[in-house]
Image: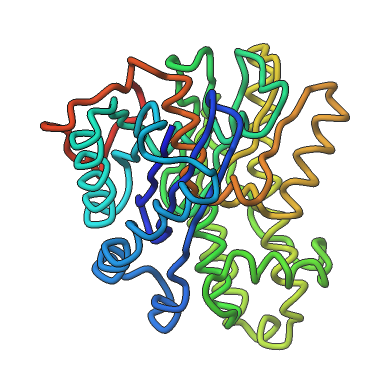
Length: 332
């Protein structure tokens, strides 16, 4: 399967066999183009995809030692994401599928993050399993009952975890992209130095919220005490609050239903402290946990190819009529 991913600012292509074995995975980021704006500029992102996608696909084929003739299908991210970016990938995949007479698969980007845990593993997560999916645009808990049956148990009401990381990093004066920089800074700080709020939803909700946490950090930094505070301590304390909230939801989900495993996925899954907390919880609770390597946590095309490989006919699309959908619903 040839996978193509252009939902945001990473131009990616990959060749994956049987929904698991990664023969090649190529991705280029646009950090240098967006850094001076402090965030992603959609128009710049889409134009860079146009400039890079053909070369990235050719590179993926070359690294895999494959030719277009041996590809069994083409998988592309249909949504959700930035509409301009999505259109570039979808248009390219449609053209290839039509010209080569290959099946075309339209994949939900978030489903791709679920199947990232299947890549380069002899034994994938056993169904049913729970996924904590945390990224710059999404934070949610998902019950995965089969390759095509998934239910969102809880989602963010406002800022996603990755968005909160990036905004807090900006408050601390860290360079773009801020999330990884904050993670590195927090490793030198004391997570107990400052007590930032933990969002606790009313009733039995598993929903998330990080807007109040980000605002609390801003008010603290503007206070007299905050102006003299150690930046590593602030970063570590903020990170501890995010992780406490996320792990509390995972624990609550397991108290309500039984799952055979737990998966941590999405861009924020590359965070060192969150990975450590997730694995420690799994060991303490006797739950088998799966965390993809960092290269499969962030946006990549291998996960899109993997999703198509497992979902099959459920995501088969017509190359003449397929359209990008920036608000693609999660359910198939």
